[in-house]
Length: 333
Image 1: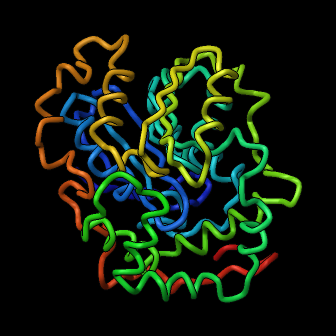
Image 2: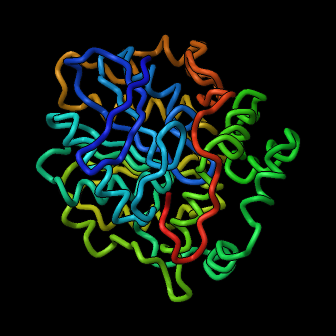
């Protein structure tokens, strides 16, 4: 697995992880919001796909992981534009797209912008087809509370509190010290929380979300896989059930006992579903049955591991500018 950085034509600087043969079928994986990045959400998945002959690509979105913040506001529209620009910049041929949570909404937006370039779409606990969230007013007001990010960082500095906080998104798996450390470092050593807070301020309104692609899901004719944990406390599984009926060609998989971060909570099941789904129609690629050895004890698929990478994927002596809390109306640095 290698890390590469580039500057897009717009000036946005992007760092990404990649593994697999250069001529392998491309699969782009998009991580979610909050204290997340490519390695945390997709580290084990990247290597798994590479072992099956795919070219797996997972960028750190601007303001997350090792990608510095963009000069554009972290709105959904701008984040979708960055995804499209990034994929165009890599000059990828027909590719598959996998997104989790906020990254799922970005994936949907990209498919709608480039329908002729995406072969298959997989969404894990996706955002993008909800008119409102269960705790909409509380989340909206919370994003404007002064000192909120500093408070979350104070909590994140405590290993016990970090692990406890992860129980909101992981309800089935045992939370490893490595995974907790990665989340803790993402919260403390990167601008992820400030970037996500800016996203929430723009995205969440008293009357609903700014982004709701429900009325456009029928335009996506590609095969779509929806994976959703039945114990997801962020987006109820009923969201995925409703969305599955709006896509013309959707496969819905509800995972019992699994929370929001499904690929981390039940990686073996999620990986098996992804391998089978992505392999359809590709010559020389095997599904989960052809990769049974990878699901039977390989370390790279064990919950809580990040393959060949430090848990945080962030240098301890970071040269990134200090975290800046963006106030209302203030542009991102």
